[in-house]
Length: 509
Image 1: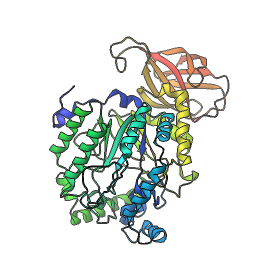
Image 2: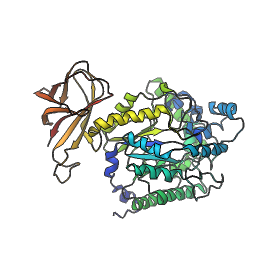
Image 3: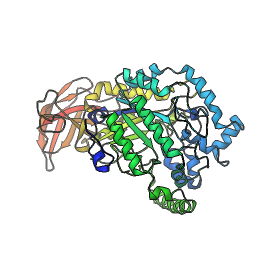
Image 4: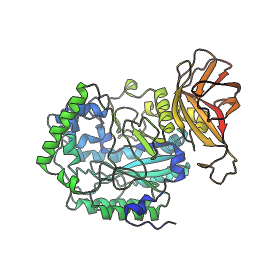
């Protein structure tokens, strides 16, 4: 066991564990009091809130989990919705509804569904920005008495998913807690700058240490920022690696430094808001609008977490695309089938992510009143599972190839991965020399039966091509071209009825 010290150099020697690299698919769970009202303004994506109405961007996001703050801003759609449906009832009253709903929660059914999806790990939101904890914490919230569930949701879910052979991780909102800082935030800069001070840093650290001690999470997934200074944060990470040697931490740990302290000042917030609003307006006018968010890099992390967006190229650093199936993470009772990502497109975007060294952390937002997972979300998990059951060889335990993408001569996009051939005797089967399978995954169907793929000369193509979905083998021919080589093979019938098609196209040494 490596003895990590509280320094960037020491923690930087921590390797991304094999299990995380191999898993490829994780399940995110946003579930809490916000799932009772389950409302947010309708947007196509989170970036629209900043592009269309920056002055109220923090209360116009499609994230239902931000409801606690949104109803404090009188001009927000959430405040109007709350007044219409709940009158002057405080947000804290939803605790009673949520705990009543927990009586109907079937944790075993969740775990079986997550296994069915083909996921390798599950990350539960243990405390979101409203500060409500999904475990009976012994760390007392000084502002809201008993601001946690009586039932140990974290512990029960950890036990259930581990029984299914999945890893378990925890999300914690370290940078935002509206039970400590109740001042309404309207803009992105105000939101980032609202990290509580005072007794909150010690409170948050005590929570994380309690979660590590009780549940030994394989993933420590913090959000927004971290309220302590650098040294105690690094010490906590070192202690985590000692407790969970194969654990990983994400990249949302911007500690309380000079910049973060400056962001708490109102004049600084005002100036930065004006600058950011102008910048967003110029990008929008130029047609260069963002759809998601990429967090800045902190002092230490094991993997990056772009939100509702991805990287365009193969990344040397492990990353994890995080997103919901609709525009919200938390359950939105107004979502219908048309608001959810197309099933096929979800599979194809997952394949694209894997080809570029990423995992997908796909969110489910259960209902608050009974803990059930909405049918459209369930169907998409099952769709992923169905595809992976037949084609998982091209995904699990693979690596990015020398190129992530290509296109067939008939115009079908391709994504590539590779993996060591099973039974190889080389000393480093994952990344060393030896025989390798290269996988070509077509992100669409063909009208005819001929498939031709341009490949580099460095690939020693096999004399046949195998389709993973049914193990059918097709004879292939290779001819030299001015830019490489062209692999061609004829199918027994045109491709149809699948979001993507995986083939083993060759082996190399």
